[in-house]
Length: 265
Image 1 (cartoon, rainbow, N blue to C red):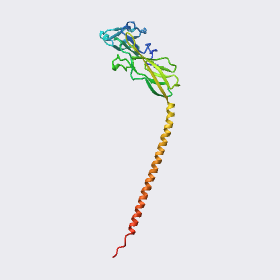
Image 2 (image 1 turned 135 degrees about the horizontal axis):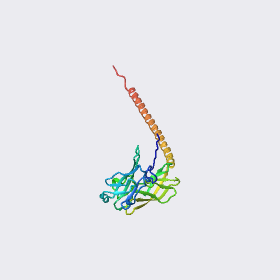
Image 3 (image 1 turned 90 degrees about the horizontal axis):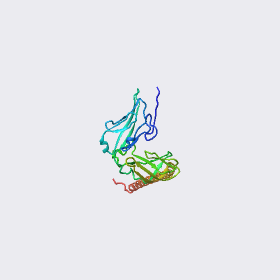
Image 4 (image 1 turned 90 degrees about the vertical axis):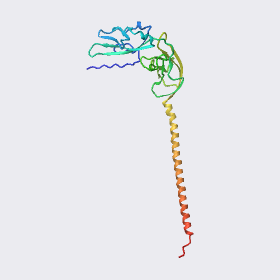
């Protein structure tokens, strides 16, 4: 038995084995009539995951909207599947999002991010920027596929960002400060809206953290040793005081007994 495994990045625009050339598609009601996929072998057919609302051609995946109610919604998600008729059947699917409404609001950062102190290890990963499209319903803003936001940064030699996840990577860890602009672009019609945000990252590497921790550890050790010595000295003083008190009490008792006259019968 032969087993072939294909692993791919769900956010990549490269080949998505075995039948699709992309991992997802984002369309609008203005361009769905132009959408087609490559012709399939005779034993493979395209299929819609929601045929009551949207049908697709079995051979080229051209889209037909059957439900007029979809044009009243802002967007609609479904899957296109490619299924062969062999035994055993092989199939795969990709998500499709069609925007029917008007794109009105620019994308926004999930956090108010302008300046941030970041601790990084020796790895290249630096930070993940998160943004959302305010036009989408709240429960759809974090849906990873199809991605609602495209991320870019202005050209810097030492930084790069993943296009659909917002993960920032360092090419070289040779700076303590990174000043750049992140560019957020949403999807929709009639135009895609853009937000630009200037961000400053103050970077602290693990080596610097370790160098800072060494004197702190020394100081902590010195304080603990000093505290132990002081505690021992105090304990010795208390023992001496108690001993002296006991001796004085014994001497006082003996003196009192010696001063008593003998009893006459």
